[in-house]
Amino acid sequence: MVRSFKRSKKSQTPPTQIYSSLKDNIQESKQLFSYGLNKDFAMRSIQIHFNQKNACLFYYSSIVDGSIIDLHIIKPLLERTGESVSNVVSIENIEEVDNFEKIIQNINSGKVILFIDGDDTAYAMDAADFAHRKVSITQNENTIKGPQEAFTESLNSNISLIRKQLHNNQLINEGVQIGERSKNEVNVVYIKDLVNEDILENVRSRLEQITADSVRNIEILEQYIEERPYSLIPTVLYTEKPDKASSYLEEGFVILLMDSSSACLIVPVTFWSFFHSPEDRYLRFFYGNFTRAIRLFCFYLTLLISATYVAISNFHSEMIPPDLLLAITASRERVPFPLIIEVLIMEIAFELIREAGLRIPNPLGPTIGIVGALILGQAAVEANIISPIIVIVAALSGLSSFALSDININFTVRLMRFIFILAAGAFGMLTLTGAFLLFFMYTASIKSFGIPFFSPMSPHFLSSEDTVFRKPIKKEIFRPNYLHPKDVQKKPK
Image (cartoon, rainbow, N blue to C red; front, side, top):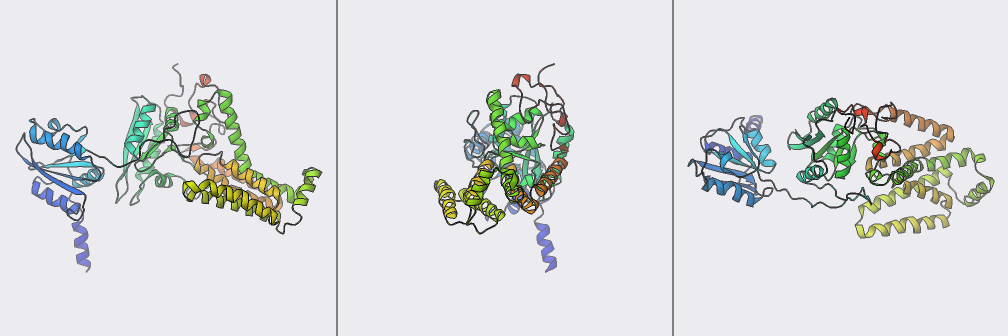
């Protein structure tokens, strides 16, 4: 039994080099791709006109464009004269391959393989036509003023959207193969005369160190390349907007794209990147800074308002005005639970409503929000399970979290909120302040691909001063120097 297992495993290993015999290449290709059993694996035998040699085409019919194969590959080979396949075939991208490992990668990527009798090399011709959505508007990062286009699940479409924004011959799209069983390609996009080579090499090395069987999309890739998988703080920026990705490329950042993902990853990032929106720059100077100020204020509210209320009400009631304190005491007179239990009940209820609204069909989403927020909240107050002011505090906390559009930082504040509530329930402002300082120190210790997380504020670096608030666009002269780009100055010297 052991011997038969070894023979079967050996027979599945493809040979290294392509045979010069067409018959052997056909037999090997049929075995590798289970021809006959694999329904969409196709084979076409032809005789080339210009050299009168027999040839054979192999491809997956489900992921190629049949009209391209007929018009630009088969028809020229049957009718035209020339010196080589490259001169005869009218396909855009032709590559010579000399081993079966590359044959497997190319066919899985939607390419057509041409074997010619007597040649020990094959030709890979791009005819890919993977099914994908058309370019549509963004779903999670909505903007009122500015481009509305969003990435799709097609890698070529996403690259096209970026090149549409950046007309620059230095914009490089570099492919890196990852995965052991399923070979997927990660596209590393950067501007060659801006990007820091050390950061770029760091990105390449992390991609090359991935030893997983399969990495299907960037959502999974993000978890392989991040530095601290158990950290609540994200170190990679996720966006579905091509204009946002293009703006980071112009600053010297690196973005990662993959097929089957309608978004991209931006590396490295800082703490401030999660609060910046493309609309901040599309709006006029004061308007953009006003919306950014609201966003930062919402960050404080969603993170600390519930914990602060617990700390002050339980341990520092002398800080509350007497009239308000009497109103709070009267509203809680018949509530049987301690204050911290009330807050936790409402926070958990809000998270349940949020999660239910995301998972149910779209037409029912607003209904769940109305029923959960109004009817259940009112019923809980009338049943004396919670006090009315807790509903207000939880609503402010929950609604403020929606102002943070980035999904990663949104989860961070939602989870940290519970930690701060428990800390405030222990010894009031003393433990709340201690928990916040520990959170702040831990965040300051984080680096994203070697870049300090609070750059350029701490440590201080030369930049365009687009950190908390931005300057007028005309006065933005420098790129962020914490990236050490090849060209720090934006405008010509």
